[in-house]
Image 1 (spheres, protein in one colour):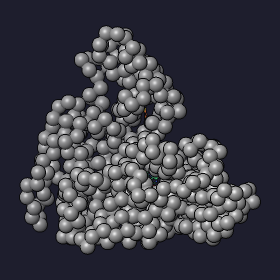
Image 2 (cartoon, chains in turn blue, yellow):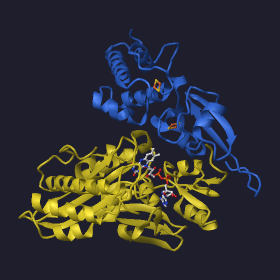
Image 3 (tube, chains in turn red, green):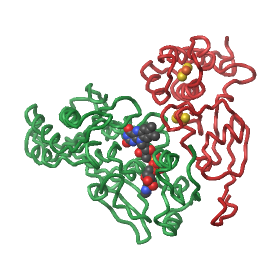
Image 4 (tube, rainbow over the protein chains, first blue to last red):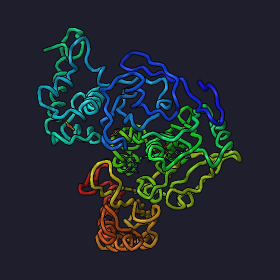
Length: 180
Length: 302
Ligand SMILES: Cc1cc2nc3c(=O)[nH]c(=O)nc-3n(C[C@H](O)[C@H](O)[C@H](O)COP(=O)(O)OP(=O)(O)OC[C@H]3O[C@@H](n4cnc5c(N)ncnc54)[C@H](O)[C@@H]3O)c2cc1C
Ligand code: FES
Ligand code: FES
């Protein structure tokens, strides 16, 4: 893992992350933040940088299924992890129910908070398929939105929850969200 | 914002971690969840030359009762406490505390050990651990030692850990019969540090008299403050409106708040008084079983 150390050269580390099912390996400085690995090494710019100070949640991705502020993790710190970003939500040309919910219920205006907001929602619904409004509001309390006032975001997540439950309930082993 | 350059290690044993700390004790930082350390490094308020990440060190994630104590491994994350049935049923005050640290996303990585070792007076666990009279287990090159929480917390961002010591676990005494504890925090919004917060812990005898009281304050002084006068006042007395009112007044007198963006000093002192009364009432209710352990009597958590 470690290549070399001298006084003048920074030791680099080989880091492999599986992002949306695809492995990415790079030799990186320890100070490279996860969000920069995702945006610059993997070229996936759907993950946004808002505050850069651990406050807004625009940079939220899933690390081994758990929401994380990617501006506040080092890439080396999550070496070997499975990462999900907004680019991984759509499957076979079909929007994820959470994405569909944000479209149907107008869950965004400028869209800057949306990728992080949706990933938090995906993790919530995977853990708790039938959240109450209070549980939704608590779950998204680390993701700030300056536009919507949150009402439509809550509705979008409720819409997605319903879609996902209905898809689950259908007897055929259809992929999640296959029922229109 | 990008941290300054540093060397990164992720040792796989505690001995290796301690060995690394000894190489450059004054230039090395231990990293747990990184949720305080990485922001500090991004602002370059911290510029360690070496970072020793504990993520691969085994056994630091224990969460169980053993030998009369709840053992919380230093790397146990806040989210784990929040979802633990043991914590919900037996240590609801720790659930009160974990669930108001930062926001749910930060809590997926932030650890209890990091919250204590960081020793920011605004951190929420230190006061709770003071009220619960926790002890901490540290390990260094010379072996292990246990440190009472009052000796661990020295000053703002300063603990009695030596530069080559690692905090290994936190030991919270198992609650005696008729014990209850609670944490009440006033915050401006989710993810903000406390304007003020109060941790309370009480044990009652069969007649309802208080045999032991713990009361401690968050973010109204250079470190978590033990409200000793309030504790001694309560000892031997029944917990009722009158004694709680007096103890809350003594707790407010123990606060040393400054004025800042979160409010003027006298407002914070007044809030300590209110929060102390609420925390004591909730602790007493839990001690007598008059609310479900995870019950919410309202108004405690802003
Ligand atoms: C937006 C935001 C809001 C926050 N709000 C709150 C809040 O309301 N209340 C609150 O209490 N906290 C709050 N925090 C702080 C957060 O909870 C911290 O991340 C946490 O308290 C520290 O835990 P960590 O595991 O991330 O530690 P790290 O950031 O990894 O470490 C913190 C410090 O502790 C030392 N350390 C960590 N573990 C050990 C160990 N085992 N042995 C020796 N030294 C160790 C490190 O060297 C470092 O100095 C907030 C943080 C953010 C980013
Ligand atoms: S950019 Fe990471 S929390 Fe705002
Ligand atoms: S839609 Fe603009 S910040 Fe949320």
